[in-house]
Length: 95
Image (tube, rainbow, N blue to C red):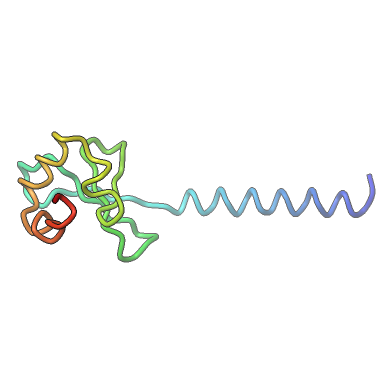
């Protein structure tokens, strides 16, 4: 094996290792604003300023890019009921 090939393999290994460490460092914390809420809000310690939420801790929505477009009719109804501030904030999106 040539020296250049060894260096390329070493670099690929380092890149893979770095990517794995980044994935492991992601830490999501789920919480509810009220105990009887259906929606979980998510604290993502790796990204400041994201407003993420979920209904099932599996499919995660980004408030600013996904509401209301990617929510089902039922999800939107629940979200609007539990979050009147955001419903009013984004009222122009529902027209």
